[in-house]
Image (cartoon, rainbow over all chains, first blue to last red; front, side, top):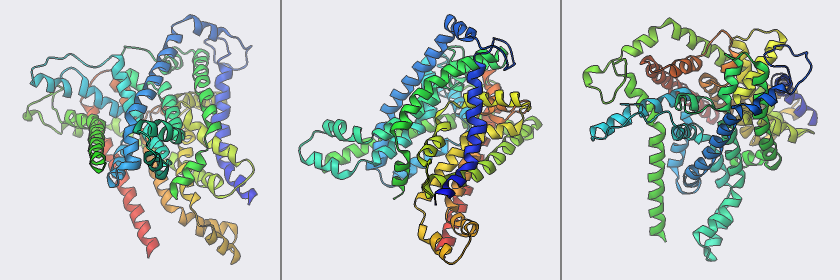
Amino acid sequence: MPKTGFLFSIPYLFLTACFFVIPLLLVIWFGFMPPKTFSLWQLPTFTNYSFIFSQAYIKSLGWSFLLAICTVILLLLICYPLAFAMAKVFKSSATFLTYAIAASLFIPENIRLFGWVIGLMKNGIIGGTLKLFGFQTDSLLYNIPVILLGMCYVYLPFMLFPLVLGIKMIPDQVREAAFDLGASPWQVFSKIDLPLSMPGITIGSVLVFVLSIGAIAEAKILGGQAIVVIAADIETEFTYGQNWPLGSALSTLLLLATLSLVFFVLAKINLAKILGKSEH
Amino acid sequence: MQYKFQFSKILLSLYASLILAVFYFPVFSTAVASLSEKRYFSFPYPTKDLTFRWYREALNSAQVRTYVFTSLKIAALTTILSLSIGFFAALAYARYSWGAQKFFHKLVLLPLFLPQSVIGLALLLWFNFLGIQPTWWTAAIAHTVWIAPIATLIIAIQAYSLDHSLEEAAADLGASQFLILLRITLPLLKPAIISAGCFCVLLSWGNFALSLYTTGADSTLPEWLYARMTSGYQPIIPAIGVLSVFVAILAVTLTFAILARAKNKVKV
């Protein structure tokens, strides 16, 4: 029934059109309004963009980009062995791991980050324990590695679960056949596992990249004043700064960075197939 | 070969345990800190400093209660909106095939791939343009934009494995399309709808980035916690943290209990 499908999609289409597409177009338009104004009906100008490129904002954008790339690479390295174990090696413990990690998604992100603050602050859990053994440490917080730790920690599930789905798609027979024909573990990994689990790798990487480039809480709660990320700059412009057009222009740049990646991925990946497949 | 495989399995198990330990370390340290009497936490503390004082303060604080209430209101509205939109969207996604379905698949994914704070502030601009004062329900709309796709995907996974013959049989027996939807499709998808509902409530409850710009004068619990955290350590924060972990555990357990009951009913 071709008509029913369209009919049923209408509520979602309405939601997306009214509260997603139009507002985003508005952000882009607002980025071309004169600075420190609140009206939409003015002559478009490039003032905001030239201002951004002459100031430290470009540094924040760079930091966010760098942190996002590092988070993706670290999480790929951390999660791949675990995902492989969950998809191919573990049996009942894989289900347990899935629940244990998925459950963390339900604890507000801010609270989990605050747990790290308590763990790492001066005389915190780690510092206090080290002191018992005679090591005096200062606060381990407020630096860039800690921000990275926080991002990896918060976004780990978003890398892990797509990877597990992707690795599950590798047929066991193909791996066994390769081993029987004398392939080394490295060859099996690089010639079979990696290419066949690529959909999962791509989805996980893009998801983590997008989430971390727009992240704000990690850098503020764990990083203190160490660096300023782009999302923090945007927040400042929309709150204390009261410069909405500038905030919009910064958001547009952030959107551009993510959308170009996302369109590339959405064009390549057929998630319907992965979702439908995993059920049978 | 067998020996080697066992060895790598043990290594992988060790690795998984390590990850899990690191993963739950913050929850553990939050719990430890929440029980300390001292205003400035330092570890280790003497057992005489153990106290439930901060829990009492958190539970008795009228301020905290207001934030919890706002968060719950938003979560409830988000769940209702996301489930009703997601149910139909999932059927359009997985059950029927139609012209623009491929495009629709991508449209469902798109909001998940954009930074939440940008979606939030876009809505702030939009509501401002429409002359709507941001308040708790505008935040619920922002949450729905991001959470309805998740509900759609969860329900769609089950809709893929839906047995078409049951719906067809009902149609052959003369049931109207509405009756089929109500009596066949909806009950068959019930488990997925319940778990989607669980996701909706909890993701909305814990969300910060979408609320940041869209709650206006109202404030949710995560927003308030964030404001407190960035202004320094306060012993009431870990207590609230642990309490909200309990809420999450309770919600998940409840969902599983309902799901198990629903499963048993189908078997009978």
